[in-house]
Every structure is written in structure tokens, then in C-alpha cells.
Image (cartoon, rainbow, N blue to C red; front, side, top):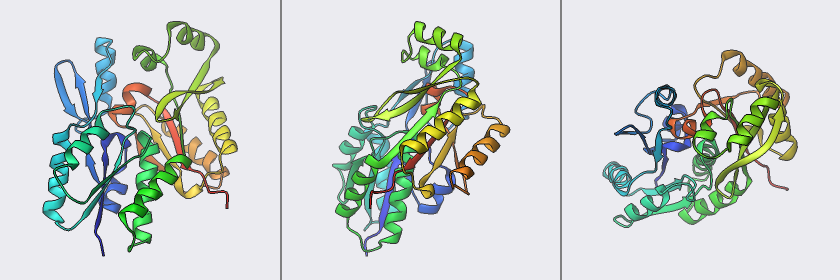
Length: 286
């Protein structure tokens, strides 16, 4: 029976519970503030917001390097010489990470790569589901696993709501006119994944909490989401009362256990403090 080890980048924002549960190996992406570059996950995400408030500049995020991937692959094969690695990459159109993993994989045998076409908890949902698929199908093949990922990535949907557009504006993703207009009219645009890219989704008007409720309702009205696949992510700044609101809202959708993820520094550099997102995998038609 083949031993499979899943790898992915830190930008998938997997919780430590899921990492430990499925023995997933995480390859760090990078964040640069001033002249110092840090491995993603090696510092408190609040540091990203403090840096922006102090300097007016967003941290620069970057993908993994070939060496980052080589180090993790080598460590895995040292511990599990006969293992097969299935690398589920962060959206390849947004970062060099997937290419870096592909370069590193040339040094080894038994590494299979597949693009998740997602970021943050969208990628996390795919990794988690794939880990469970392998556990449920111990005699599976690498080809079957890749086919599984290629199927569910098309049925995985993610949307998140920034509490402020300041970070998207600073990153050039929102124009000055849209920024000031949204503030004036109390409009909160959501962000979705489209062809691997983060793009503007629906626009909601009112308080942030009411806009989030509208966004979640629209999410579940648009897709027949499997409740077992739902994950929620929050950046630092999400209040406890908001978490309670989310739990109540999702219970109304038939989701009894809310799996909460903490947003890492990569997605938080775009979404800003207090941003909240949700993801899930759509059921098949049959």
C-alpha cells in the first residue's frame, strides 16, 4: 500500500488541527517588511497591520522558492523513503510557488503536482477533502488523487468580505474613486476566486455584519454546498460577537460545527484587519 504525504503552501491557511490530523507538510511563503523577509507563519499576523499603520506601505508577499520546496521534499523522503508526495499548490496564476515546486520536484521521484486554483481557505478546503479521500481510499493511485483534486477544485467556492477597503486600495486593487464611493455609500464589496484570481464579487450595503449575512445567504443560495466541507476564515480583528453571529447563521444553513481558520499574513495583506471569508465544496448533481 502506498504511503501518501500531502504538501501545500502556507498561504492555504490550514489550521494546525487539520495539519496534525492528516500529517500535511506546509511549505512557507514569504513576507517582506522594510528590508527583512520572513517565512509566512513565523510571526503574528498583527505585525502586518502594525507595519502598514506605521509606514503606509503594504508588506510584499512572495511565493515559495525552489529551495523551500526541496527542503520539505527531502525531509519527507528522509522520514518516509517509499512515500509518494501529492503537492496541491496555491493558485498558480497568482504566485511563482507552483513553478518553484515543479522545479524542485525534478530532483526526486514519486512527486505529483496539481494546481488547486484557489488561495487561502479555498485551497485549505481542497487539501482537507483530498486528505480525507486518501484516508477513505487507501488503495488509491496518484492518478486517481490528481483526478479527484481536478474535479473538486471546480466545485470549490470561496468568498470573503473585507472590513475595510484600505488594504485593497493600497495594493492597487481598488481605485480611489471606488474606495471613497464605497465609504460614502457604506458599500462592502466581496472578493471571490475566478479562474484562480481574486476579483470583485457582489456588493452589499449597510453595516459590515449585515453585509456579511447577505453575502453568506447569497453564497448558499448560489451553490449547493456540502455542509461537511464548509470552512470559515477570519483575520485578526474579528470580534467574538461576530464569531457567534457566524455560528448562528451557519447553523441555520444546517452546519452544526463551524471549522474556523485564522487568516495568515499573505491573505491578510490584501484583506486587512477584520476580514471574514467562507468556503465550501458544491455537491455533485447526482
